Length: 296
Image (cartoon, rainbow, N blue to C red; front, side, top):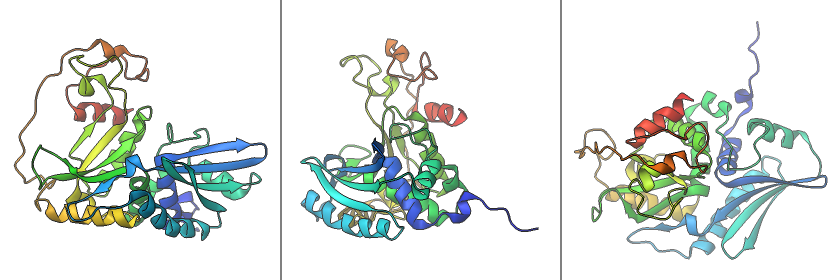
């Protein structure tokens, strides 16, 4: 009996990388019969700053994206690079009819979801091999990742640098997806800064709703360097900070100061800025919340 076909059998590294870009900062827009997929690269969130290297980031980003454009075109997509405003640059894929490539991409992205506020990692990525999974993660990092020397784990410790993967605050379940993918790739998470009142403002010292900002998965640079980036300037800074870190960071063998503080109850735990499945629930640490999301 022949082997049954699965979507993952047709997945390749180029499509996996594209999916990472889309799930990071992509949105579908329909105008008449024309569909556009807009993938935004905000200058502010793509800061990359090391000790030796400083870059004109808009210029470096634009140059790095030329290779990404060529890669997407090689898959048969009509893609262009555009400076949509002074704050970002975008890749725009256009379809003038609802053809098979559009249908397949929407299917992989779960059909009903239309933008990064609700996209999930497709099951086909989890069903694929590790290189496919790494390509997806590189795409996600290239649109949402921060790598800069100030992202250290403890103030003043210049051998504990981290990268941040950002997730839109409304997309809670994508955090769980990313955590599972990182575990598959044996890339440990140092901590997750959730956009939740138990973590961002546990003692209600700031304005109401202050906590409702993007989630940040934080990973030591030396653990993430095996994934890397296709944006040249980001990859150079990542390597520099990875080399500066202690070699055992994230390995489980380094000395870690345990944090067991119990969070106070917070009336914002019932906020409508939280999805229904989180309202009224209390979490003392990020692992409790992550475990709950994974269980859904």
